[in-house]
Image 1 (cartoon, rainbow, N blue to C red):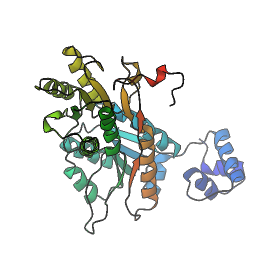
Image 2 (image 1 turned 90 degrees about the horizontal axis):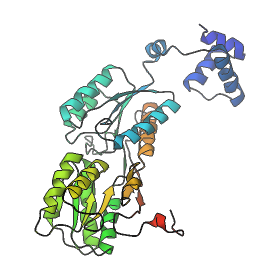
Image 3 (image 1 turned 60 degrees about the vertical axis):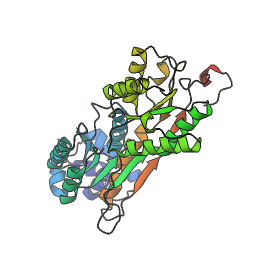
Image 4 (image 1 turned 45 degrees about the vertical axis):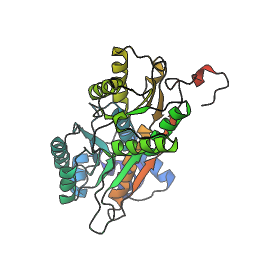
Length: 348
């Protein structure tokens, strides 16, 4: 099996230069870097990750704790994380905390015991155990999608965080429905305790206020961020004496549940009730009618979280920061408007 010294002899450089090229520890002239990479390819050299980790105390691995199995939204985030990690030369260890606080702490401990260099975590509604563990063991971590209010003793942020805008895009859905003449607009919100739920409720209420509509607490229901909960929550809304004429759903899974409830009760979209959803997804434009939605930059969120974590590993003492990425309003026809794709002059 070829060694680093073999690569150095073939490229005509020192072993130290080969190490800098492979580990990214120091800038190397482009032609020298290419000579090293050509030698690596020609000789079939592979790094001994285990030996390197023993020397550097780094495994070049990242732990990812998200509900990727139970929440399809995180699948796209996972793709972004994986691509960015691979590009940076890091492997990925994945665990699903199922949005359960106790299980969350256990899987984070498991990842930590596998000696990952840092973690990316989508926190549960009650992240106290998670925060305590990360703080006690000084684990470099980035919170993904959901924000955690956990300031240090001096009031500064303790953890880096990456998420999408939530309030303003939700407000836009509400004001759009209000502009179409709707005065009773319902919201199927997510799991209480999540920052995404709190911020989308804020956006819902802001949208009502901006449109000059009163807030009616009976029109706000919680669907627990999953399909079955949203189906029941939507049924509750439809059973009101004065049900909503328009509905906003708080994520893609809850959109599916809401559609099931509407179909079970013979309600058509948008004929009987207009529908807008937070989270676009791959098959949203296959529904009839096509779903008007807020599209989150899921892959970009995952990739940015990796970059923020790598910056944290490179500069452990840098101030923590929160990065918010903008969403896009995807205008289709479930809101009751003519489908823009049907018009030859429609703009993206």
